Image (tube, rainbow, N blue to C red; front, side, top):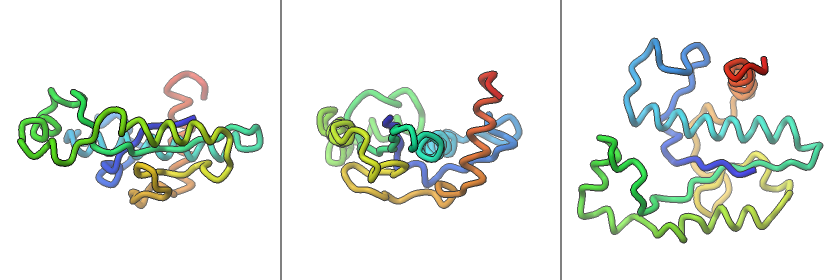
Length: 149
């Protein structure tokens, strides 16, 4: 299983008592980073729970892909309106390449629970990304939210 994340995970903060931002201000960059951090935590939860069943999970930051994603947001929209965006953005095909590469590795245990920044393992992560209590807590809270708790 591959989950798309982002280097934006570094700006996130998971609060198990306020997953939906009802008690804190949901600034767009922070909320986005939190969602991408949660993708990494979820990836690690899968890796821990189902490795013995041969299920492998990894998270990937594909890079700044030149698509219309986030175009209507005020924060990401700033990037779309700058002429410099074309210098950093990669094509959708280039963005898909690390996902395809990992998918082709199949159930390789070496990638299980790993966060990749493009093609490199162990990209820069938020310090919460390896917290076992947070991995388990998010898993439990998510299960409860969807009626599996």
